[in-house]
Image (tube, rainbow, N blue to C red; front, side, top):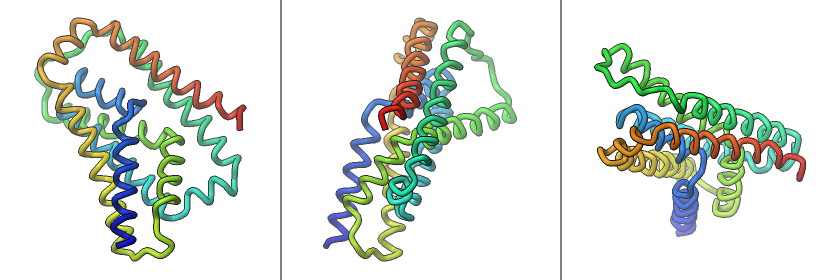
Length: 211
């Protein structure tokens, strides 16, 4: 009963966190609209794997590690923040570049799938605030003693929540109407998305001064 309540609490908290707007949402949405629906889904899968990495780290005691070594968290925030800002800058710089909509061969499609997956994964794991959220949620809900089966269940639940949510984002935003709107206002949307990523990244890196 205690483990079921813990599983429900963790699942609810992670679902609410995934649904809140942030760099991950921006990246999956833009990938699905600007590239293709499959690319958005690959990016969503990358997000799921990133969530799985954080879940495993949290189960292994990430919260205690960050608390014991404050400089580690400081370094993670600086590096992660700068990386998010770099991704935003790439979007901003490419705002006026037209999309290539010609037929893509299978080798090129395979390459873009890998790139989309890697982009989703790196965007997820580059945000140390997500790591802290996971660590805090797990510290709050995990029972004092848990079985290996329970830990596998938690990891699987986290992966499922992250992947399913961002897959839904990719499916909805890659439909015809959002894609037509994006193509028409590409430069403005890319600048807005890039500016948001840059602002989030620099805000994250600058917040280390307050620690």
